Length: 135
Image (cartoon, rainbow, N blue to C red; front, side):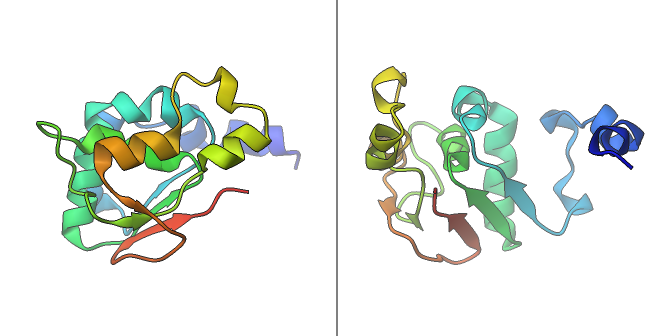
């Protein structure tokens, strides 16, 4: 079966859930993908912030990769994020420059995480939050 046919036959792909309708108790883990999409929407989405905060405090697995940590910006309440002080990895400013995106970006993920979340950028595992390094 061709990939397109598989996708068309998958109910979940045709009717994705809105973040506002997601119930974390229905899932064992949360995974946020990378790419620039999270920087354009999840970084500013209140529902993404609510879900990330709830998953972090639940102690259940949370996987955030590449540019996905941009969604952590949406967890701030009165300027403070529950991810403050965590060791995380993300697509770095240096990597953005290497692929020619830094000069075109409205903001850079590494800079925003350091300044607004106050996390420490390191390629490590920290508690239940696991982060994948960019390419």
